[in-house]
Length: 295
Ligand SMILES: Nc1nc2c(ncn2[C@@H]2O[C@H](COP(=O)(O)OP(=O)(O)OP(=O)(O)O)[C@@H](O)[C@H]2O)c(=O)[nH]1
Ligand SMILES: [Mg+2]
Image 1 (spheres, rainbow, N blue to C red):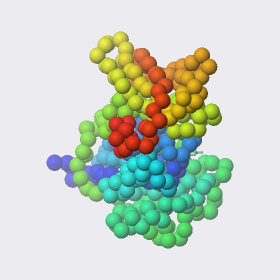
Image 2: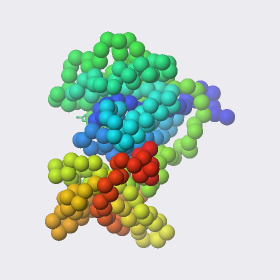
Image 3: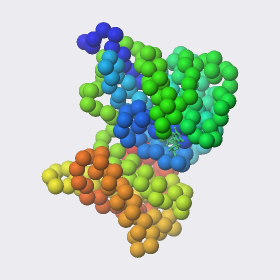
Image 4: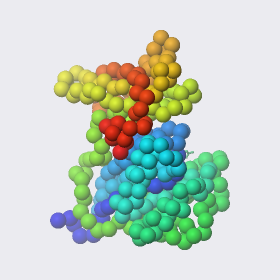
C-alpha cells in the first residue's frame, strides 16, 4: 500500500526528431541517461527514466522522434512512438522553438486527444538565439493542451514548473520502482549507447551515415576492471575506412571518449575494446534491429 495521495505514472516525451526530448530527460533525471547529438534520429528506442520525488514517482519515457520514412529502421522508430502514446498517463509534446510545428504533430495530437491523455505543450530551446518569440503551434493545439510553456532543457529555465505541472496530472498510485533506480535499461544497453554517441560526435563531419553499436562482451567478474568488447557497425567498406581512420586514430579517439563516459556511469575502471565491422543489413533486417535493442 502506498501512502494516500501518492502519484505515479508514465509521462511520454514526444515530438519531432531533434526537438530536445533526450536533453529534457537527462535534465529531469539529473543524470546522463539518454544520448544527445546535434543530429536528428539520435534516440532509437524507448528509454525509461525513473524520477522518485517526495510523494510521486514519474516514469519518463524518452522516445525516438516521429518522422516520415518507410525504411525498416524508420518504421521501428515510429512504432515505438505509437506504443508510447498508448502507454502514457501524461504526454509532454515538445516543439522546437527554432523549427516550429512540423509534420507529424497534428497526427500525434489527434491520437493523444482520442485517448484523452492530458497534453503539456512545451516549446523547447527558449535560450536559443533563433528561438521564435511567437507561439510555434497552431491555436487548436494550444486549445487541446492542459498546460502550455516554453522551456530550455539546456539552462533549466521552466523545467521545474514543467515538472510540477506534470506531477499534478499523474494518477494516484504507488511507486513502481525502488527509489534508487533511475532507469529500466540494463548497463549493457547504456554502454552501447555511449559508444554510439562518441562515434556520432567524432564522425559527424566525415560519416553522416547511420551507425549502430553492439556490445558483445560485458564482463564485471574481475575486481580491477570491467571488460567490455563492442562492435561499431557500418554499412560499407568505405565507411569502415573512415571510422577506423588513419593508423586507427579515429577509432582510438572514439574508444577513449566512450571509455571515460562509461567509467563515469559505472564508477569503475573500464577496459574497452572497440572494433569496426561492416554489416550491410543492420538497418534493414527487423531481427537485427531487435537484437540491437532498437525495437
Ligand atoms: N540551445 C539549446 N539546445 C538544445 C536544448 N535542448 C536540446 N538542445 C540541442 O538540440 C539537439 C538535439 O537534442 P536531443 O535531446 O538529442 O533531441 P531529441 O529530441 O532527443 O532528438 P532525437 O533523439 O533525434 O529524436 C542537441 O544538439 C541538443 O544539445 C535547449 O534547451 N537549448
Ligand atoms: Mg533523443
